[in-house]
Length: 143
Length: 93
Image: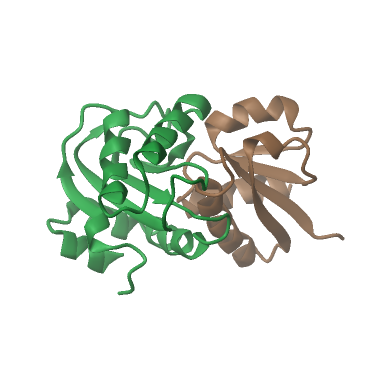
């Protein structure tokens, strides 16, 4: 598997109480490797407050992000699998337990990552396996 | 007939709208419909020329009044069956 998503950007069994903590947890994975700054996580949360929960793109799946900015150091994508799903306020697709975050340095640079991600997410079996995965290695192999 | 122009819309035009574009491209290809699918942010949806807008329920409800073009709401951007059903219902009517 190629490194379009890094192992250190995946975490399982994350406990959160609400959607803001969920985005924070997913964003922290990017923060810890220096892909983004703290500001970027705040921007991702602000975006949901402003535009609503449209980042919930499918049943139980959120894809948090903000605009390319100085808060982004590199193109990256993270995945926090929540121990218990939390509501994001999406009528159709709540509650959410797969929380992706991605950062983009420019408007096109992240396209390959999104393309890979789309291919995974449209496959219902794979998404179910993601939810059941017990180890980061297992997740990494799936995607 | 001119190629259809389809805009997929999300808050910034680079995340969820990109996922929807990829999956919509796949569906259109399967159905043999030729179209240019491109992404955009919610702010430019009104002023950008397009035949159709595809977006989420949250954004679609705001856009349908102002966009000046048909707005098709997709509940799950990763559900190929839903995308296909709506393309067939709206574009091939």
